[in-house]
Image 1 (cartoon, helix red, strand yellow):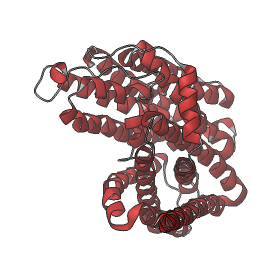
Image 2: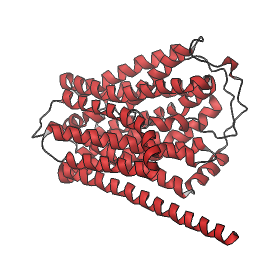
Image 3: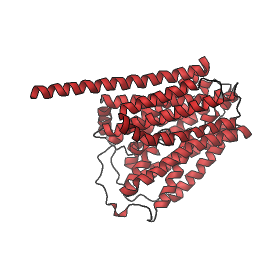
Image 4: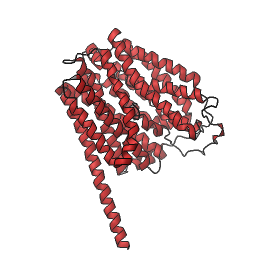
Length: 435
């Protein structure tokens, strides 16, 4: 994900998914760029939106042990407070992106934030675990409209030469929101309980939503399109029929299965013996996410040196080493294991997500939206299955699940390598026959 954003790199392309042919690009003369009126306001607005989105999306992840204790729930049951949100987001990305083509990016982002923030204010008062999961699902579905629109808004309103910087600020907001929401909730929960912690995250999101509303400039280059479900279905079907894209979607989902399992369950392990860490310290463990900034940035250099498959092999090896190291009962070994898991995950995710847009020759936005859906479905599956494995076999069970997912990535990559070699052999044979 890009720097610590649990999926932000795919948002860059996925949000511009179109359900109808794109209008002719407007002139860049009235677009925003550094130094021009509105650019700084736009940057702050989307940064705030990114913080709110990912703070809300993963707000319960650092609180799962406390949620379990409060409702007398198992780790698997409590994990649905995370999985329901990410799963609903995964299912709603494509529909929300189509709606943004019809009703506008700014309108869709505003509506998404309003609904998600409003739900966030009710979440701390959920009377039961079932209600908490249901509210989180609604929240995730609402949040799907923001990443589905933000990148398209930037592409339409910002000059091309300033687009990378503008996207960087939004991705930074994703990263900081995902990390700060977990850390904030951990320390507040230690002092006043998990409900107060969710309330604090909700108030943070409210503040961000207010900043967004008053600072986001009016869209000047958006041209409404018509909803065309048949055209969207044809494009999606073509991508799902592509063997390489299917492999990349599976790789993204499997990497996120590992990551979702580890970070959903790690809190349970660290609050128990032999570590017995307080909730605030457990929340601060998410500072390890910063490692993703380094490994994501290094992914391009790894691909240039090792090739795409070589980079994937290195990423899965690093992840597997981290999983095995985390089995130790020494805190330093566990933390080093988390560093390796995080570095491997972000590197692998960056390689797979960037390969999607290179592989798709048409409908790149839809191709990346499908990757994002697979990615968040992997997060949902990993969180729930990882918690079930922990309940059945302790941390070793969660690690076994992670290693199985890593083995899946290796198998898919090996299959892709053999398929590419077979294709090269066939191509060489055809050339020989023609000659």
